[in-house]
Image (cartoon, rainbow, N blue to C red; front, top):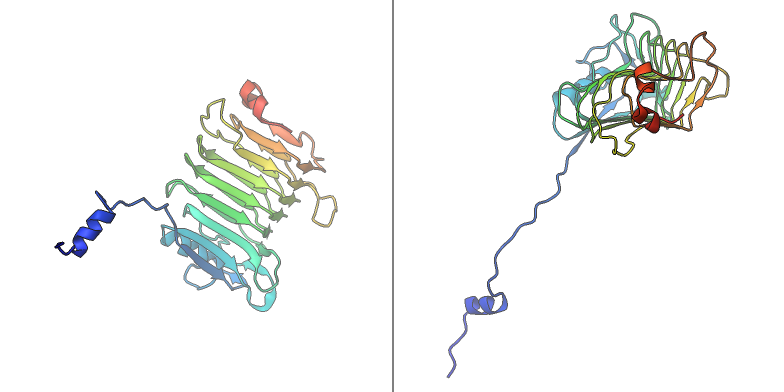
Length: 288
């Protein structure tokens, strides 16, 4: 009496006018980890598991998240940069984290230059890739004749975070930056660091941060840093200013920093360059 329904007809009845549809997945990046195990670094990128080698691996394998970790053989927890040039490669990859916690000792690794020419310890150069984020955390850097950390050539959307580092006994600034234009989507965050006994400023942001609408939220921050005193509590001033904010370095939250022992004549705890002081917007957003 009744015709037999086919599987096709049942499917059509249960799912009338059905069509396949796809929702886009969120963008994901695979994490690649390079581990530093060698306590001596001559600056050669061909020696596996040195800091120079790890930075070169990050630079030559673009794409995705890259992380440098430390597991120093013997548990000494120090990387001595001993080459004639004393220069590790610039960091060029835009999605990089340097996590300085030594997996052997559980303490921050110390990157040290016993003696030698004037070089920075770590330099990030944003010229080479699109917008990304650099994170440097839990490192101790000492003995370099120039800056402990130099940040240069940031573009729109670039993000930099430096946290929980100990920067001391270097010839110039603890953290220095120039040619910075992070735009409305990028930011710089320098927080919870100990910076003392360096020859220049503790922190120096000396170039424009870019054109940001006056209604923008505060994105840049220098907060919670201890400047001019050792981790053990002893006085150890830097040779320059505590914090220098240069021309148009606006929309910075500069709060809760302990700045002490600024004893050199003509040096200030917080120095704001004249062009910045004349800007009402700058005054509104930069707070001591």
